[in-house]
Image (cartoon, rainbow, N blue to C red; front, side, top):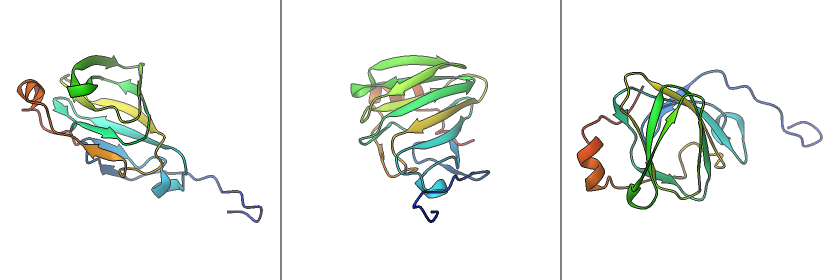
Length: 145
C-alpha cells in the first residue's frame, strides 16, 4: 500500500496450478497472486477428451469466455441441463449452481474464468457424479493440461 492507503497494481506473469475441479489454471489474478479482495480471473486449459469434476462455487458467481475450442457444460439440479459453448461465447454461472465441463472435442479448450471469489480454490465444493452422467462421460479422464 502507498502512504495514502491505496493498494498498488500487480502484474502476474507466470505460474499455475491444477484445480481440484479438474483442468490446468494459469495463476491469474486472485487474493493469493495479486492481493485481490473481490474477484479472481484465471486462464483454464481443458485438454481434448477430458472432463472436470462436478462442483459448485459456494456463494460466488462465475463468468466464462471461451477463447478457443468448445466445451459442453452439464449444470443445474442433478446436472439435468446441458449446453455447448464455442470460441467467442460467454457463460454466466449463478452462485451455488452445480456444473461440470466436458471437452469431447479434438482440440484443447482454452477459456478465461472470472469469479466473485478472490480465493483460487476455497469456495470450490466437489459433488458426486450422477450415475446418468457417469455412463456418458465417466470414462473420460479428469482434465489436466
